Amino acid sequence: MTERLPRIIFFGTPEFAVASLRALHTSGFSIAAVVTAPDKPAGRGRKISSSPVKEYALKHSLTLLQPELLRDADFLKALRELQADIFVVVAFRMLPQEVWTIPPLGTFNLHASLLPQYRGAAPINHAIINGETETGVTTFLIDKEIDTGHILLSETTEILPQDDAGSLHDRLMEMGAALVTETAEKLCRRELKPVPQKKRNGETLHTAPRLFAPDMIIDWREPAVKVHNRIRGLSPYPGAVATLRREGRVMRLKILKSRLRNDIIAIPGTIITPDSSKLIISCSAGALEILAVQPEGRRRMATSEFLRGFVPEGWELA
Image 1 (cartoon, one colour):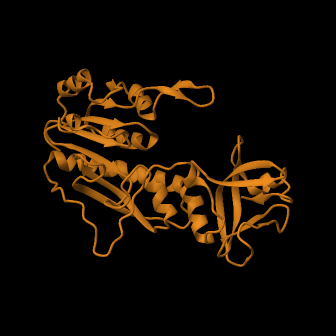
Image 2 (cartoon, rainbow, N blue to C red):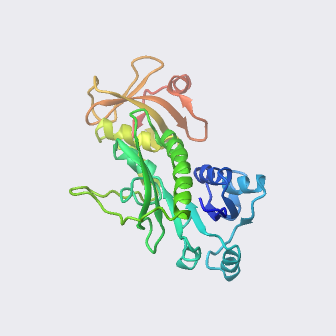
Image 3 (cartoon, rainbow, N blue to C red):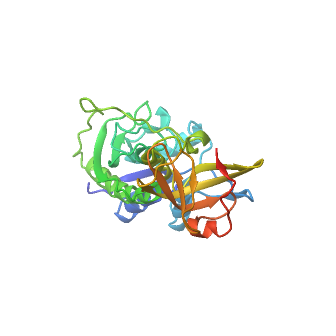
């Protein structure tokens, strides 16, 4: 690093961003300020909730900014007066040009994919849903478009068969924190040459848009492996949803863990209970043994526990 510790303003909100903030903070960088989302009501009680990044900043007495509007004149004035060398962005909303052009060494972002693949808000989920076997983290300079700036550094990791969105999130969070620190150090020493994003020959580019309710609905007419990957890619949150109906009643059930069963062939959507502790659902090619579920309004539980209070007879999958 340079002789004078570089000053950083950090932008982030969720738990994923805390690991990067912590890594910078404990590596000796001067954190001039932390910018995070305003407090907002959350949960059933609608109590005012602070972001994980805010909680870290308060715990470590870091200067905190929570602007409602990123183009607010007072906010922009505060950013300039802090005289930071670099802005670092991890899991934050899109910055206007008036913000990311302020620091002399630039503003860089951490993204949880190997750019240009999976640009968008939900790269971890979509990579698993699409059956990818490899992903990673990338740091890049912010420009006018979302997730399109020149790449600084990247690191690759395997997506394991047993991975779901939760386990991959945690692994990429720690990898990303290390990459953010390395990027900041090398950027300060002017050792990085930004490289334009470029797809490889013959490569299909996938996007990672925000997930909405229709994305979570399981279609049992799909091959078992596709349904299995959707379950993995949406677990533990927001959860892949199965809808069951019986005599006018409707039950929504989140399927959080499954196992491929290629030894069973039946009409897609058939519910099979070989014993009192197992639940198998057929797909268009193969079937899935359901290992963990979350009934609507209740906690996550093993399927064997769920079946102690649920009799499948008469229920049909929508």
